[in-house]
Image (cartoon, rainbow, N blue to C red):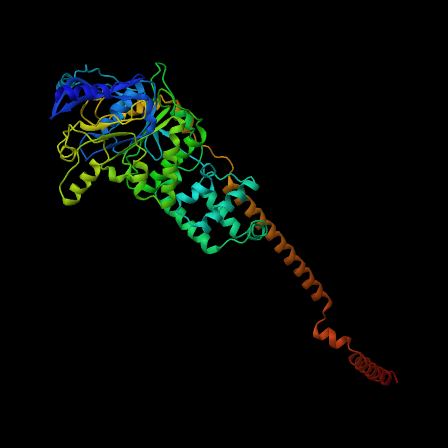
Length: 513
């Protein structure tokens, strides 16, 4: 049995092209020295899964894969949800248990660090990852907001109007301003060219945007846009750079996380050239806490994710999902994953036991293990492993004692992180504030100019009315003037004057006599 097992594993995990050792094979819970389990570089763009209960060693497995890929010249992108992946930038201090593990595997242990770049989509330290609303496009932007067809049509009109009028949509403020302008000041113009826009639908879109803003998306949308080619760098020694996105402060904001992930995947798919069948991937993305991507995703968003997962491998890009249970990954996505590394699962309830039976069905049939039982008995740093060989055929399922990471299995200090960030060329490139005129500024100026013009027209009208009113007052006589100018009044006045004169003259004449 032992001889047959060793022959099966050695034959199943021997590859012609580049590969790296993941650990040593185990049978009957004992490590078989010099029966090594390796992974072929050529099929790592067929995607993969690292699953297991909390504390079973998933994060360290991710660390092992990233540092071995780096040594082979393959860059990677890691989602650091808990803050414990930063240690990959420093060599392991070593430990007695590490030496014992590697002695059992039959693999010498060598400490080493990987070149690391820290990235951020929030307020964490690192190079800022941003994208403009325009780069998302109307279809993807609508799917992120979970809009219906009518609302999505309005979003398409907003993008079209801004394109036609050279209004850059850089951030969410730009989009909101454009939407407000098109339904208020610019309503007549928009309706004439693009048709009527429902105010009720506009209100729904605004509420969706506010929801996205409340999860911190305001810091993600904007400039300077991150260029995904910067994820594919190597250092002067030819090692792939490990880009670590620090996400410790967005675990409670799944909408922002899924928005970021979808944009990154879409940007990579749209910009990377076709790679064909290469000896190794161009880039590998590790998506930790993958359930956060899928749990809150709308049906439309799920369709988009599934399509990208199926197609992005042709660009030479591999995706490794990291989660607690394979059931966290939709079946249509799970079926695309060639590499599976399954750590221990817990069977505390009847539901847990059912989930374990279903999980066991995801792996190749084996005569060497009772998979259902073994899934609950795996120790820390142990896993069931299967991959695709260079011909695309699944390798035999093997209980594996995983090698230890060559880098530090702990977080970096603030001083160490600050030192890496300080020397980062990407921080200098992307953390500068860019404040060019966008749709918000241009439309605000346009509205203010329109309002100023309206005020000028109002002032002109007011002055005209004032002049008219003043002229009317000049032509209009008072009551006394009207009486005095009356013909009858004038005649009576003349008569009275004559009589007064006569009387006066009579008196004067009498005196003279």
